[in-house]
Structures are given as structure tokens and as C-alpha cells.
Length: 482
Image (cartoon, rainbow, N blue to C red):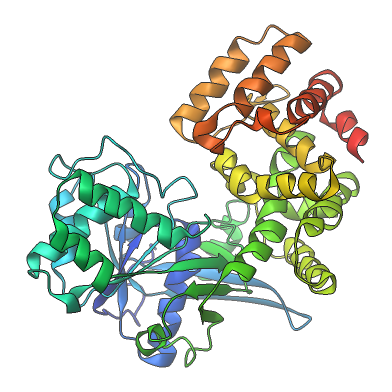
């Protein structure tokens, strides 16, 4: 029997107060869970209508289940193993704007909409010069958002009370500011008028935010056992850790509309999120991204087995404690304590966090999560951090798309995939050919925002490690840096 509102007798319909861009595992295991909790414990009385940001997605599946899905939260809390599950009833419906663009725009006509949240990956908050206002669905998330906000502005004749609070969850620095900047760029490009620009600036709040919860998602290895335990079929089962943190940089008045404290949520409304972001992105997300190509090429599949592995576990430990922590300015004891907690979260026995689920858009992730540590380490120590450089070499090898005889299912922007396909398909098997690949990747400013070949010795060191991976294999090559 399929999970739907007929099966779930406690199903409730709530007013749509949130527009959510993204239907993936993370938002369902984080934001929608919090909305559900606020409904149950703090009378928020609201739901999220979910917009599919890309042409391919899960919206049809979500609508088939009436927005319902089962969320498992598993981990260690206060030294005790915790494993719970519940049906989340906070999504009203899903919309595919590529198929139903007018229905999407109508969301802007709802006076009760107050919040917009998103998670469209690090590559999602980007400008696309091909987006137009009146030629159907825009490709980029900021383009879609601008069109929606303009439709709302026109619908309500610029009414200042119809502005919204926008909280992006994408893991890029100053995400709210970046999103607003692109929206204003579209406003100018599309000639939407000064009144609209004034309305955006005065009556809408773009918050920068930081999210923290590991959400591995669908438990494909154990879904038969999960289905037997639940007694119904659920195509959208989601799994996350117990820990959660949401830091929102914005006005304290947000608490008046989001009953986060009454619901007991670990949400902080702050004036400056910078210290939280730097610590989290560098010490949690940085090691995640650094470990993926190394551990996967080594033959491992999950974060848990990677940190428990004698060799890869040592590698991850060294990346965190010997390289990343050395680039941060918070008190050393506090950083070590935070890192210890991160290792414990990585070792969560209940959560199977697949390396390939982290591998999405690895190039932009390396830029935001690991490159700042690499450059800061060089600045402070006068030398490159060996493990982070090795990870970059392994990443280039990873994008070859092969693990032995097995194909790697790469997932990144089309231009990134084309770059690597062109480079590796024309590789002549020589050290000079490898140097050409490294030089070309490091020179790809569209991803990096700079030419990484300008960083002293980086081209040489990455090429050296890539040569060792190619000639010796990852298991021997990693011994060089350990």
C-alpha cells in the first residue's frame, strides 16, 4: 500500500505560507521537518509548496504521495543511540515550473506566502544571461525567483506588506546577498522599473543562512527492511542525523513569525553568521568534499566506512586537524572540540551517507569548501597543504569517470563535464599530457573565479600527485602524503 493521505489518517491541510525551491533529501529532512514540528508543537499552521528547480526531479513522485514522506532521524544524542521515524505532513503540493509555468507564477498571488527557502546546490545561485522574463520558465533559480517576485509586485500594486522573507540554504558564502544581487541584475536587465527595485530593497528581506544536518537521504540498501517496518510503500523515505542547526542572519522579528523557540528548534537568528559559517564549512563540509574522490577511488562507498578505515580515516583526520584547523582563528581548543564532534557525526552507525551523494557539483564544492583552507594555509605556513592538494589531484582523476573498469556516474554542470570529457578523451598517456589536464582544470576561471595556476607550486604539486595516482593507483599514491 502506497503512502498517501488516504493511508495517513492524521493528514492535515495547512495554508501555504512557504515557497520552497528544491524537493531533494536535504530540504525535506531539514526545513520541512522543522515546519512539521512548528505545526505540531507551536501552532505555526503553515505548509510549503515545493517548486522543482530543475527539469528532472521528484515532484511527480511527491504529488503521488500527497506531499507525504517518512523521515528517519538517527544518531547519538547525549551519549545514547537514538532512532526515530515519523510521517512529515508539511508539504502541500509540488509544482514543475517547466511544465506548469502559469501555475508557478500564481504562487505570487497568494497573500499568505511569507517565506521563500531554497537549496539548489552551490551552483544554483548563479546568473544565466539567457533567462528572459516572458519566454517561459527561466533556467536559473534567481531568474525564476525574480519572475515570481515581479508577478507578486504587479499583482499587489507594489504593496509593501506583501514582501517576503527569503532564506536560501545553498552553501555559498553570503548566500542571501548573492541571491539578491542577481535578482537586482535581472530587474535591470529586464527593465522591471525603479519601483520594483525599491520594493525589493525596502519590503523584502534576503537573509544569509547556514544549515547543518547530514541528510544521506533514501536508504536504498535497507529499503526492504524499512518497508517491512513501516507497513507501507514510500518512494521518498528520507534519512537524516539527529543533530541540526540553522543560523539565520536577519532581524530578530523573524522569531515573531517563526515559532522556533516554542518548537524547541536549534535555530539561531543572529546579526553576523560569519564565525558559524567559517567553522562549519571548513571543518564539516571541507573534509566531506576532500574525502569523496580519495575514498571513492580507494574503493569505499560511505562516509562512515571511510572515517573508520585505517588509511582513509588517517587521511581525513590529518586533513582536519593538521591542515584545516591551522587556517582558522577561533580558539584552538574550541576548534578541536568541534572537530571531535564532527568525527563522531561522521561515524554515526545509523546513517549510511554515500560518498556519491556528496559528489554532486564537486568542482564548485571544492572551490567553496576547500580552496579557502588551501590558500590560507599557504599564506600562513609558506607551503601548500599536502592532503588538500592531493584531494584536488584525486578530484581531477575522479572526473575521468572511471574507478578501475567501473564507470563513475558524474553529476555536475554541463560545461564542467564537457571540460573533463575533452581533456581525458584526448589524454595521450604521458606526464606532459597530465600536466596539460591539470593546467587546463586549474585555469578554468568560470568555476574557480581565478586562475589557480597563479598559486605558487600548485600546478606542479597537483600534477605530481595525479601522476602518482595514474601510475601507482590511489592505494599506493596516498602513502606519499601520509
